[in-house]
Image (cartoon, rainbow, N blue to C red; front, side, top):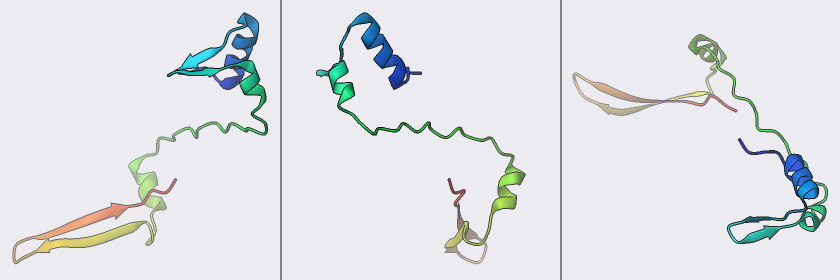
Length: 84
């Protein structure tokens, strides 16, 4: 896990260092030119039971296509959109 931007900034201030990554140099002055930047944490995944997921399905969430059919076989493709 990488440190957040505030931790990186404090480290740069305290130790008076610049960062270089893949040939690009980042200084404290570069950080001060970025204004209005709002960092939004990534959503935390929620583990759901299969039954809970099935209960949330509706007609718009499920798509069924017939891929192949003959006298002894029907092959279906089922797509389930779980949303975000």
